[in-house]
Length: 182
Image (cartoon, rainbow, N blue to C red; front, side, top):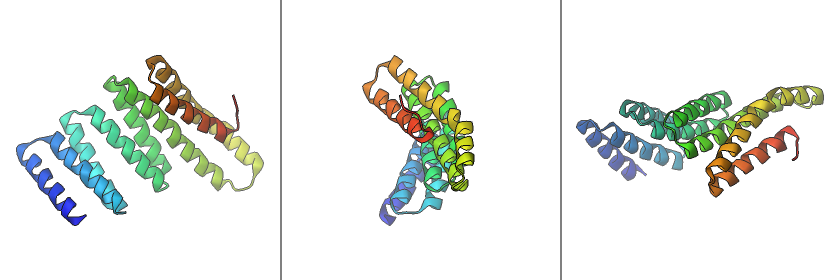
């Protein structure tokens, strides 16, 4: 891994010297993947933050949206659900800003999943108090269901089977958690 990191650092330095923010961001994205593979979450998060900043400088909203998607996933893995939700909403806004329908579908799935994770954490903290759990779920269900439903509607409209399947899956998970069936 050290050799791969070394070579990625060389690429990053070369792109930086050329003033190529996109290339430099790509090199940092590689560092993120390597750090994740080798179980170094703090280093991966720092590299990702750098990549996102460079993508922003380059004006690459689509790449920035996908990097924020990765940031949200990393935050969920580490139990930082509020951070995941914030990153998911930022990724969604960027996907919409670049008018990429399929990216919007992915980011809506992400928003639903991030909200689901946050709601699950709140429910877990409520312990075995069924009345409190029910109240919390009812209070938070729209945050989970609304983006999943919107995601499915857009995917169906777009006609992409892969994303439609993913949207159905996200909505099914949301319904499962909040206790509904359709």
